[in-house]
Image (cartoon, rainbow, N blue to C red; front, side, top):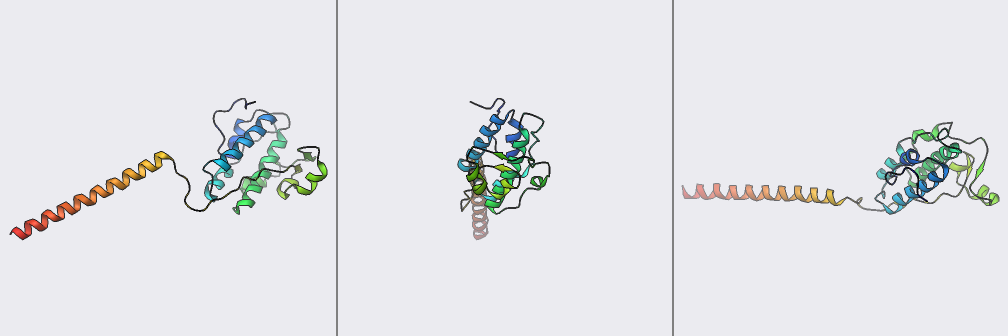
Length: 178
């Protein structure tokens, strides 16, 4: 089952909210976002910060149980920020992104009461989120287009240096002939 209005896979949590038309869409899109983070090029802190920075649209008026999705997104962004050791986005502090009544992801309530991370518990969302923070050392991945542009620039600089050496050689040869 695919989300009803998906135009592209979400790269930011805000895009999850933009594309969600129901709670089931929301669940699938969160999984797609998880996939983009764990398998895509979101492998460093700046990229992860960007992926959670923009405030998602509110979903409580868009579909039934949208308030669950609102609280989940805030809790998830906060939890991801804590896992990556980056600053929590300001939008997660919004007091309307909390549930009044507890919501449990499944019937294992006793386990969820104990194992749910604090970011979720304080919002009355009891679930075990998928761990998506797997930061890698080294340079971030770049696209093929970025690699080509960088190679073109490097090649242009090389050709410019060769021209300068040729010109310098010509000047030295002409001064020796005088």
